[in-house]
Amino acid sequence: MKTRRFGRLGVAIPVIGLGTWKFENDDRAQAIAALRRGIELGLVHLDTAELYGNGKVEEMVGEAIAGHRDRLFLVSKVMPKHAGAAACRRACEASLRRLGTDRLDLYLLHWRGDTPLAETIGAFEALRREGKIRAWGVSNFDDEDLDEVEQIAPGAVACNQVIYHLRERTIEHRVIPWCEQRGVAVVAYSPFGSTGGFPAKKPLDELAARLGATPRQVALAYLTRRPSVVAIPKTARAAHVDEIAGAERVTLDADALATLEATFPLAPWRGMPTI
Ligand code: NAP
Image (cartoon, rainbow, N blue to C red):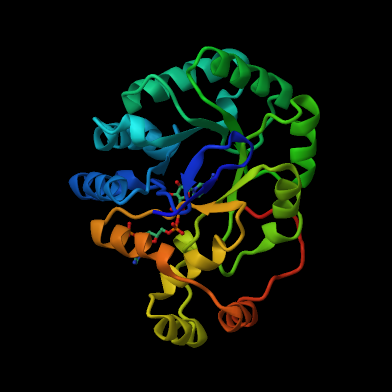
């Protein structure tokens, strides 16, 4: 799998990783096999959260990654209700236990809640000094939230994980430019449109056929066309992992980009969307 530099962290990260939201509703053995297939193919950026299945998903991920920890870029998230200093430590330690590891590569604030950002960042920094997390980031933050983070801890935030798919390109207005100017990585979640479904559009299907790719592969190539962005589609099926991994071979020429821009136009800025 092709890699790229993960913003300020500077480590090499696969362009495509794997998400795990709603894994608890999938067949356990199949979902674990899918993650293992992904690891085999180099999709070693694995995204999970304490929220997912109320901890059950982290346990599934823990089972899938046993024996592979050193190859991974493992990410989990703390819920806003656990973002205070003491609760954040407890939440992180519980995630580590469920994942069967002693460290996360990245720990994210899942979305902004009522806890002052400075307190959460203080907790993240303490976890980082102790080696429990290698870096920290945020999720679902707009440019003004990011300004606040940068004022509290200049140069420290590693990424912003945000919604980005063909029909939801809002982050292109402000969030991607903010991140690119400061070398902060952008992680595209729900790249297939999540519960809203993947778009069935004739121009996309025709374009994919011309490129010898599938529509989902074209979508992933498009969403990761800028060096600042990596994507984390979710699948609990090994065959779908193979299709996802194949996206790295898709090259979009100027005609392809024009077709996608025309088929999925950028809507005006109306504030930061979430799932
Ligand atoms: P998504 O990746 O846009 O779409 C997932 C759906 O696509 C699943 O139903 C999956 O079904 C299907 N799918 C995947 N590959 C396929 C293929 N090759 N052919 C046909 N169907 C395919 O949705 P998402 O789960 O919302 O987003 C991805 C990840 O981003 C999440 O899992 C999570 O880790 C993260 N996320 C983060 C936040 C946040 O607030 N930070 C919010 C949402 C998501 P199968 O499993 O059957 O393949």
